[in-house]
Length: 574
Ligand code: PEP
Ligand code: MG
Image (cartoon, rainbow, N blue to C red; front, top):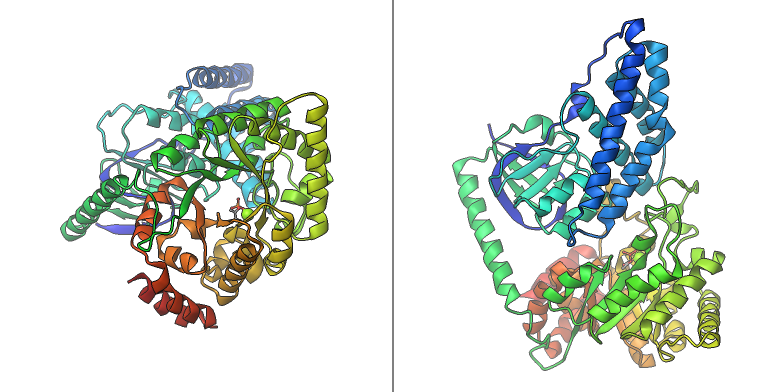
C-alpha cells in the first residue's frame, strides 16, 4: 500500500529507487540473567566489544579518503571520545555485576540514562548530540550481537536509497564509495551532523521522519523529494510516472543551470551583480567554484571551533583561512569572526545554562568577553590576508560602542603583527553584519565606521519577528516577506548606498530565486548564498531588468500586509 511521510529536507533533489534498510541493532537487544559464575566472562565479552569498536573507529579514522569532508575526522574523534568515556566503557560493567545481566542490556540501560540527561538540555544543538551517544552504543551492541560494527552494504546496486534510524558520520564515509541515490533517517534535525554531511554529499536527503525504518520494507520502491521533505513509499503508477517526470525536469534544469557557470551575472539593462558563496569549511570552496561563485561572501569560521576539547590555535586557524584564500585566487574571501552561541555552541559537553541563548552572550559579544580568543582569530585572519583578497566580517553588532571595541582589538592585533614583522594586508576591509533590528535602524552610523555591510537575514527575521529560527512550533510564522523585515532590509541597503559603502545579503533570502528581483529592486548588487543556489539566482538575474522593477517594488514596500505582498511578488517574478 502506498503512503507518504514528511520530514525535514536537508539536501535538495529527487531520487527514486529501492530501499536499503540499515540494521537497527538497538531494537534487537534482549534481557537475560547471567549465572553468577559466568558474570566475569560477560564483563570480558563487554570489554572485548568496546575494544573491537575502538579499533574499528581508529581504522575508519586512518582510512579517511582524501576527499572526505574535514568535519568527518572530528566526528570520528568525537565518537572515540564518547567510547572512552567512563560512563560507556566502565559503568555498564558495574551494572553487569550488580544485576547479573547480559552486556547488551547493561549498556542499553546506561545509554537510556545518558540520553534522558541529554533530553533535558534546552539547547537544540547540544540535545542532538545524544544521537552521537546512541550511534556509538549501537556499534558496540552490533559487535556484542555478532554483527560487524559498521553499516554493511552487501548490495552494490547503484541508485539505492538508504533508510536508517540514524547514520553516524563514520558510516557515511562509505557513501563516498557507493553510488547512493539518497538517504533518509528517522532522527536528526536540520543542524545534526547527519544533515551537515548530507549537504556536503550533495544527494537528496531527509531527516526526522520518525518511523521510516519501521514502516519501510527492504527493497520497497520509494520516492525521496528532498526539496519538499517528502517520502512516498510504494508509489502507485501515476505518482511514479509524475515523479519520474519531475525528476527528469529537475535533472534537466540542473544541467541547464550548469551551462551558466561561466556566464557573467549581468541584468538585462547591463548592471553587474556579484554572486558569492557561503561556506562552512575550506572544502566547500570546490563546490563554490564549481557553481561559478565569484567570491566567498560568508565564511562561517565557528565550524572550526566545534566538537573539540581545545580551541584551534592561531596557526591552525591561519592554515584554514589561508587555504580558502589561496584557493580563491584573488577573488574576495569574507571571513566572519566567531559566531558561536545560541544554536551554535562550541562544545556539546559544555551546556550553557541560559534561558535565552539567542539573546545571550553570542557572536561578537562572546568575543569581546573573551578577548584572547578574538585576538588569536584576528591575527590568523590578518595573516591570511597576505595571501589574497581577504575581508573581515563582524557578526551580530548592535551598538557603536561594541563595534569600536572590536575595531580597537583589531588594531591591537595589527600592532602585534607589525612588531613581529609578520606581513598582512594593511588595507584589509572590515565589515559588519546587520542581523539585529537596532543595527538595521542605525545602518547609516555603522556604514560610516565600516568598509562594508552584510545583512544576515536569518537572524534579522528571528529578532524582528521574535521567532526562534530553530523552533519547529513557530516555523510557520518565520516569514521573510513580513513588511517590517522588508523595510529593515531596504533601509539598510539605502543607508549603505548613501554612505557609498558596499552591502550584501548573506542570509538564506539571498539564495531564494523568488526573492532575487525584490532584492535587486531594493538596490542590492551583491548576494551571498549556499553554493547550490548560485546558478538558479544567476538565471534570475540574467532575466531581470532593473528599471522595470521599480514600481512593483515600491508597491510591495508600501504594503503593510503579507497577504497583499505575496501576489505582488508573484507579479514581479512573471
Ligand atoms: C544570518 O543570520 O542570516 C547569517 C547569515 O548568519 P548565520 O546563519 O550564520 O547566523
Ligand atoms: Mg546570523
